[in-house]
Image (cartoon, rainbow, N blue to C red):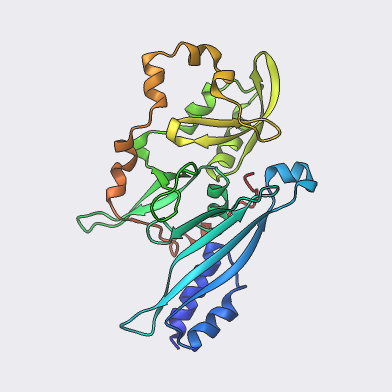
Length: 286
């Protein structure tokens, strides 16, 4: 058994958010020299709504991790993992396969947030074509949960800096009540981590308690009431929606070419170099 390879895989599992709970079954499978095997683990998360009403219950997530042995050596590789999420109060599971290389080593917690409908921002490393050192960029991620591709996956959209989504400017567009600069900075940290932020917003001359999450595709925010029902943009901006200007229409229409322009380079998440920053904010999104 390749001990160095085993330790690397254990570190990978820890980085992805599974701790050491799979180490024993991983070592057992490798010692038996199984060509390909799958390990499963259950995760439980408490949504923001459940924190306010414990009777709602927790969200349950099942993760199946797929390992393969190299045909040329005794090394094993963790290529991808499949997630099945069942939200509290819902019988309809949401499924997604995350490829570690293609999807920039999305962690289990980040997978939960994305499958919950939230966007998040994180570092990715783009490999230069001319052989130069990888460049680190801040990239927004969002799953399109409305559609599935030919493999049953929801498209994972990536929004690079060239897309020019400015979270601070987006927050400024919305009629938050009494939001100080310090509170705004805190909100931005929460949203970048893929969580819901709670605030008060003036809607129809009334102060309403809302939850918000970032929507980089439309360069704005998704706004929900206390029951997690979406509040439409035309309720928040009745005049702007009813009488849109040319510039507003342009802002609300994402440039697909800009979004994917940087994806032509091979993306890599160098977890080894950023492992000290890999601990995730345990405040759960929704």
